[in-house]
Image (cartoon, rainbow, N blue to C red; front, side, top):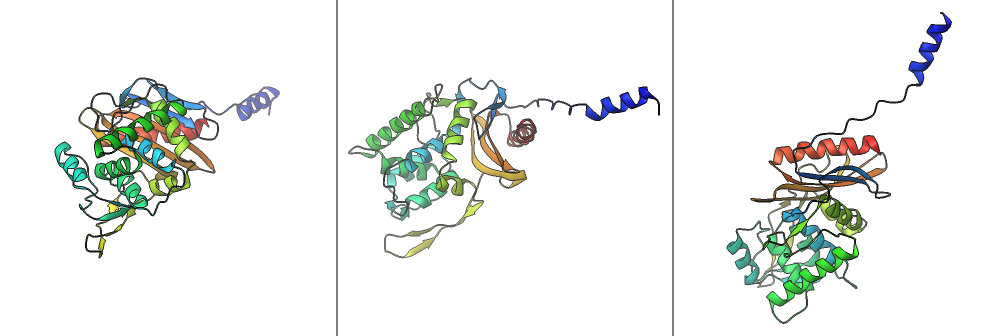
Length: 281
């Protein structure tokens, strides 16, 4: 072998790994961060405000789980007002029955897996302050906004507990990812959003036990290459959204896509972002 060939071989052998190509996503906004240190790994219109749809429910869960002396087994009676709200708004439902007693824990599962808007309303009513359902839910939404400020979510404003916006419910991929990174530190939340299916047993008006039909998680990516959460969202204007988290080889990333054009495109976008995120950690 000539000296030139040896040098050439050495150069090839020590060449750095080729840089990973930044993926193109169809979603209008996207963001991925390293959960360990908060470092941004991918951005696309990361600070542009967009509708959040049911990803809003992540903050609803955060506020509930931040209550002092929280009793997850405390029972909440399902009110007709919650059912009326679902019907009026054509909202996604966990199919809770008026008059049934449901625990706070069960409501979290119904809200985060089945995306039940009546479950979200029940939690807002339970943990808000005021003399009426309307006053209590309004107070709860104020707590959501206070919490957003405390987490540095500077481009976020909530006007609902479930993402059914009255025109002012907006956040950004970066802000929602900040929220996800924070709330995934809560063991209860982390367990709930990683659950593929949950069957609740509620207490009826007569005191008997009702076994609900299983709530299947709307997040079909769960379990795919280390995916451990978090929450889907969809709506006529919001299109398709997903706040996600995954762990591979002991490392965790969190991220968000907002306003994907279809469910399939949302899934494809998130898979690309996960693979890219781990490749660039």
